[in-house]
Structure formats: structure tokens, C-alpha cells
Image (tube, rainbow, N blue to C red; front, top):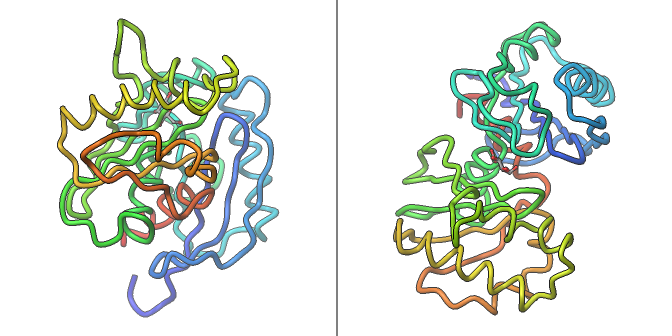
Amino acid sequence: MGTMSNKAVGIDIGGTGIKGAIVDASSGKLLSDRVKLPTPDGGEPDDIVDTVQQLIKKLGGLGKREPVGVCFPAIVVKGKTLSAANVSPKWIGLEAEKLFESALDRDIHFVNDADAAGFAENRYGAARGAKGLVIMTTLGTGIGSALIYRGVLVPNAELGHLEIEGVDWETKASYAAKEREELGWADWAERLQKYYSKLEAYFSPELFVVGGGVSKQHEDFLPLLSLKTPIVPAELRNNAGILGAATLAAGN
Ligand code: BGC
């Protein structure tokens, strides 16, 4: 805060890769290249912490005051990870924020991955200027979700696990499910249609933002959906989690 720059570090931990960059938390611009390392097999806490330390080294280390934000694919309440849908079960009930704080020797801000991405899209990306409720969804290994109302994040929405036809719908409609079952765009879009129709009926949002790597190919599936709510691809792509985590850490 104050007169110094708003330099902060953002780290995005995912099921397959861990990405990080130094960012300017006022403008949402990257100040460094994005560094990516593979997520260690098994996704165990100590191995992930080691990888994050290596990644920070590759970024040139931490300055004295740089805030650090880390986002992670689980429910995060008061720094504790309370779920582990696509990572090692060892994360359940873990004091994750504290674990990173002692390894990095500073306070950090620890947050759910989709929440970080949604916050960033609202601040700097596809949902900039939205006045009502924005629902961000990330279609990847799982389905992540974030609710942002007038710039305020309502944390830990776990709408990817909405039950439809008796099943946890991320197992049917995530990008991983599309790949696993070798679904074409039209078949996958049918499943997405069921999903977004439910969200629309429950929340009446102003806007849906769709992130995850597959959002690059939005032209292949978003036009197949029929919704009252506008649905747009994320703009920040692979940087959304990094930017959101860093911005939340900087307290902006
Ligand atoms: C997890 C969420 C996470 C999402 C995207 C889901 O399986 O439950 O916490 O945000 O995957 O990574």
C-alpha cells in the first residue's frame, strides 16, 4: 500500500501445473514472464510446497515486502483447505496457509482457485464493469465456480458439484469429462446446457464467464448454448488465477 508500487506475486496451483508470475496488482499486468512447473505426482502437500519454492526461485526470489497470493483447487476457510476433489486427500483439514507461510517465511494470502480467477476477471477482464451478479465457471479437471457481486467475492461457491440427474455434475461436464469420454462439442454442450440452465434458474446472474484452457475454443461450444444470460469467454486465460491471488494478497 502507500506510495510504493503494487508489485505482488501470484501462484496458481492446479492439478497438472503450478504457475506463477510477478504482477502489478493495480493494473493487472504481468511484470515478469509466467513460470510453470508440473504439479508433482500425487499432489501431496510437502511436494507442492517444494515446487512452489522452486517456482519462486525461478521468478528471482521474493523482495522484502512483496505480498504473495496462492490459489488452490479446494474450499479454503481461514487458511485451511477443507476439500480435495482433484488433489491428494491429505489436504483435507490442513492448515495450508500456515504451511506455505512457514516455508516462504512471510504472510501469504491463500484462496480457492476459481475464486481468484473470478475476482480477476471481474477486476481486469471479461466481467469488468458488471453491476450485478457475475458467475465465473472454470472448465478444467473439475468445474470451479466463483460468485462476484458488485466487485465483492462471495467465497467458496462449489457449484461445480451441483447434483444433476443424481450425479456430481463436474464428473460429467468438466473438460476432463469431455476428454475422458471423447465427447464431441455438441454432446458436451448438451451437458453444459443442463448445467448453465440450472445456475441461471437458481441465481439469475447478470453474466456468466467461462474460463479454463478450453475457453480458447469458446467458438466451438458457447454458441451451442441457449440461455437468457449472456455467457462470455474469460479474457485473462491462464493468468486469471495468478492475477486474482496476487491482487487479493495486495489487498487491492
Ligand atoms: C473443486 C473446487 C475447485 C474446482 C476447480 C473442484 O473440483 O471442488 O474447489 O475450484 O475443482 O479447480
